[in-house]
Image (cartoon, rainbow, N blue to C red):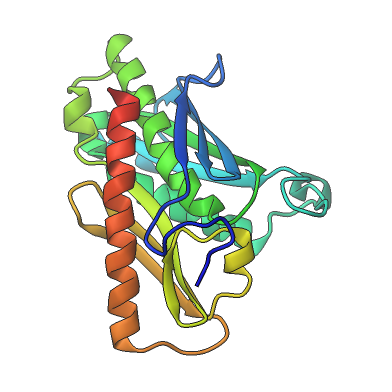
Length: 241
């Protein structure tokens, strides 16, 4: 069964990670999963939120947003609406959880890093692209802290593992990796898999969109997503080398 872009069922879209895309942040990456493009920036501030002061632990958090015309039709800016939508909150929290999984917060010390993930163009998999790109931006921000003398530990101690994410799904009975929008909207089952570079799972989000799925299908999708994350981890390493 042919995919819209001719890929094999277990094949990622072309993935690129362009570092130092923006001149001001301590870390910035333009990540592209096919036609999905997300700008991930990492901003460093000295100190931590009030509730964490004196703990000796750092803090990493994330915010996610989508430009009004990132999609096929224009959406109003949430800042103009006066409230952040539930989907935006959910994705922001997912990115934050995922990135904290790869950081030793004690080794980071009482420094804070905020990751801003702004979708410039959406064609499916925006949250998974954001996680994958934000890891590289975070790594660059931690490296900046080390060069600035604000890091008591080594970069390798703070960033003790990598993290990446990819979508998987079942379309007309066929498990597929890294869904584009055209596939995502017709998927019977839709799932996001977040893995570390050493193979552990951070999060698995799976939904029967237009049906249910069996345990065997769940195992197939998780294995497919994990294999995709292995390839993404390789791409991240190459981008950072």
